[in-house]
Amino acid sequence: MFNPVTLTEPIEPENPMLPEQVTTDNMVEPPSTTQNGKGEKCQPPKDFNGKESNHKTWFRILEAYIRAYDSLFPDDQQKINCVLTYMSSGRAAEWVEYFTDEHTKLVQGNRVFDPEMTWAEFVKLLDQTFDLRRTKDKARTDLSVLRQKPGELEQYILDFNSLAG
Image 1 (cartoon, rainbow, N blue to C red):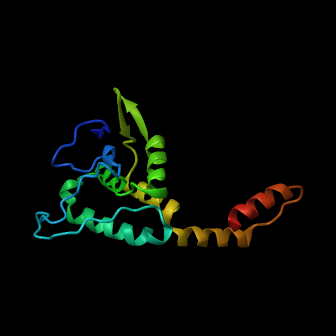
Image 2: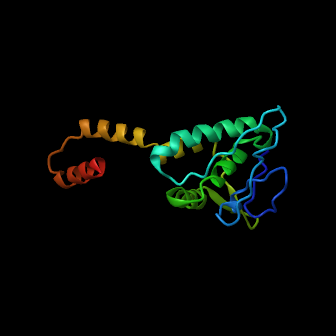
Image 3: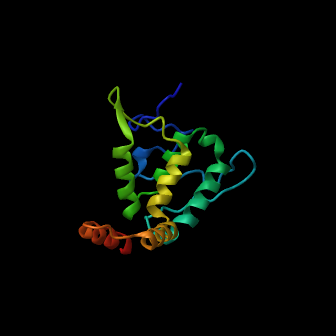
């Protein structure tokens, strides 16, 4: 049975990274100098500001961090919460706001994430939004097959301008 993570419950020491902490003035430092139970010490990832050229490197570091502290993130919802806490500035913060609005619902007065959202689906959303190389490659492919259909010049121009941008 799914036990939703509410966005309004108090912060517990064993779960230090909940979405309500996503503010630059209220960031809780994760265990950066403590061992993770396996004898490893891991540096926490830096905050991601949404710059596409940094996305892949940032996400690889974040995934390594989540794997190193896997006991803190036992399910997909906890992993998603962790990622959102490292997206608190720039375009990434705007995306977090949009994501939270679109993928939470009110349950008994508390906002909870959609229990059907998997880690793989979340990663796919991140890549679609922030992986510039993937976006450019898709745009190139779509431009190469773009054809004007009879009587649809305006749609063709809109599609072309969208892909060219």
